[in-house]
Picture (cartoon, rainbow, N blue to C red):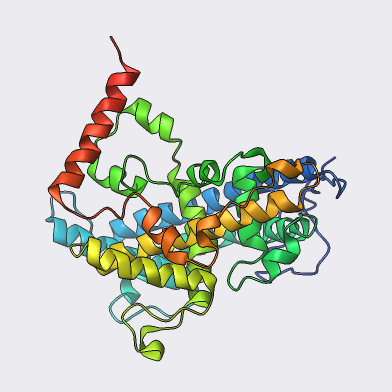
Length: 353
């Protein structure tokens, strides 16, 4: 059963409505003992959350495009000139929407577009409120999951991170192996390269992308809601630790640091940003493996013989997780040739004619 919005002006005061009775669509309730129903409800909440985010992004991007024109964007300008205008327009929009004063030199542009930006801000407020409300429901629902207490003990991995994984994956007991969950979340490499590398450099056919099952938005959610927050709690800064990569503050921080050390040797050509994102991916893989294992151990519907430890290579030795990822094979020509031959063989097997 749903309820219509009572008034078009309700919930537009810009305040955080934590703890305030909902004025929006009710969320269907489920029995706490019904794990599958809980996961299905979480998936639906995830869809509602992404709907709000998608609409908000469209509004913001439309505002930036509008301001870009006011900044004098020209299609025949040089790439550097177009990039400078894009950055200026984005800055004007972001500062206005966040309530910050315009920077020197931007006042004339802001005066010309302020009415339209105010309209965008009004449109974004109910979307932000609805997103926060859905996220509160998602976090409350995680308390009924079998791993709730386990998650509480992991610094940087909170209820919203768990909720996003379940919303994107469903019941984790349905995955016979943690590697299948890695693939679902875009964490497993494909033929020796991360999906982000394939996207930048190309080389995969449409059928191979379908086989990979990779979705950039899903991968972005996992990074924003899990990897990034965990990095802030599992690692100390380079300055405080006196090390090149920061210091480990927990189990997953150790995975991150070990991976950075390994890729510094195997991939000296990688830029720091590339190495950081790679290490965050490996850190997230370690977490997801442990989560899958703990979930299946806590799920009474899983047969005891199937409650296998998902991350045996993490038990007392994080270096195994670091080195087991196929990407960490070094930049030698022989390894690149091996990866290319393997991909060619896969294509031949899929197209025997």
